[in-house]
Length: 171
Image 1: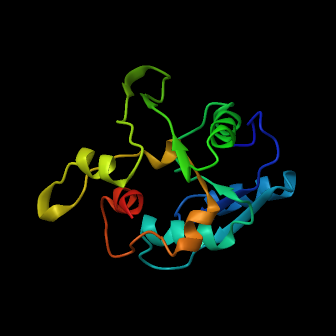
Image 2: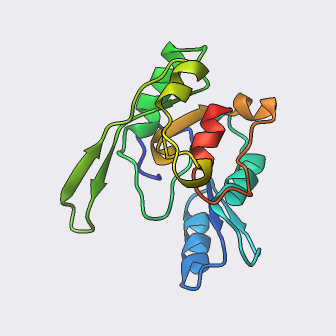
């Protein structure tokens, strides 16, 4: 995140009770970079939806995106996403394809997600699994959203353990 070519960003790092040295590492990054904010979540059983909702509340930028600890962005991800949103002022967000890469840097697979322009076309592309849980339509690690979408009272459902991203997109 700190190597993005788009420089006007605020990074919010959340730690959800890691048992490793994450908090010390986060504190060190905060000392070195004034655009990093830390949030330590002391909930005994936080889930990703709850963490994302907390992060949204702390975001001050008109845009936001989410990145998990085992993922990374291409250095032009934010710049390219911001350009796309600038060229599409009606869009609430953009997302891109993503690659699965091993720790050794070996490309396993390029994941291509279906495109959609509205709710109807999205609903037609969503596939549902057991008990009606939707499969992921958008990889949130490859998406950038306008924060104004959250002003519409759209958040992540904290009672859903899988598919909360697709539910968010459907809403």
